[in-house]
Image: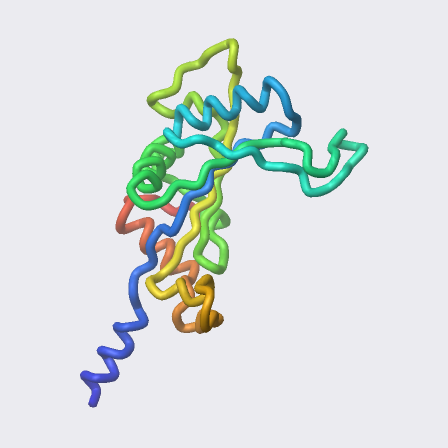
Length: 178
């Protein structure tokens, strides 16, 4: 009986995994600067970036609704792991504890795109910073996205902050700074 309970407990203690990594460069304006940001993002990730559009109109920021203000790329599986290893090297394998949220996701910034080994400073392009957001999931998260019989994920099966920290310490040898 005790052995069966341990098997049930182990069934729900599946390790989290990286669902996707979103790399975003916010420029705040359309035009030549946005095109340069797209070229930097495609050089670093190897994927074609998508424009992000503003959701609001703000006279203070000179924004109109649906105006292009940035670009982003979503990376999955092997591409995501490859990019993450490079991004962590630029951060010296250190992530602050406040970068982890309660749902187990992580967000951090890279202030200079020339920190990557493959990038060199080009005065025609300039310097761009970027935001990296990592979405973590466990096996079975499909139930919240499927078309038929969509359900909420039970609390015992959600990814927790401490599970994600443990995952990054073991898999990527990341030092979490408190």
